[in-house]
Amino acid sequence: EALDITLDKFKNILSKEKRPIKQMLMDQTLITGVGNIYSDESLWLADIHPRSKPNKIPLKEVKKLIGAMKKVLRSGIDFGGDSMSDYRNIYGQKGQFQNKHHAYRKTGENCSKKNCKGIIIRDVIATRSAHFCNIHQVLYK
Image 1 (cartoon, rainbow, N blue to C red):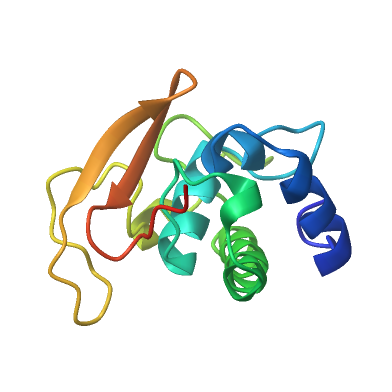
Image 2: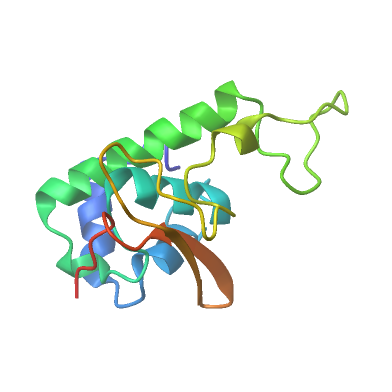
């Protein structure tokens, strides 16, 4: 469970991974609860490029990613989920997290990170879209 993952467990998962961090985060057999939207937003907040190799991300940045992931997921819960597509809660109401996006489906827009002059671009990683800033999100190879 992404909200409960420890640094040691996360480091262990990262150390064995060869796939891009974006793909790894969405692998529900490794960490549950992180989907496409939440992975884009977590990586944006943590300043990590979605094509980064998990085992190359420095420890300081791994800690930052765990914090970002938990913050983004809690925000998603607080705002009732993401209804960019068709999600509705049990009462048929839309969530509001789509109004808090910084990267997901923001292609071509200016990055909203303070003092960043980047542009959000879209790429496809393992058949899933990835939205990220071309400036502040660092690629670890």
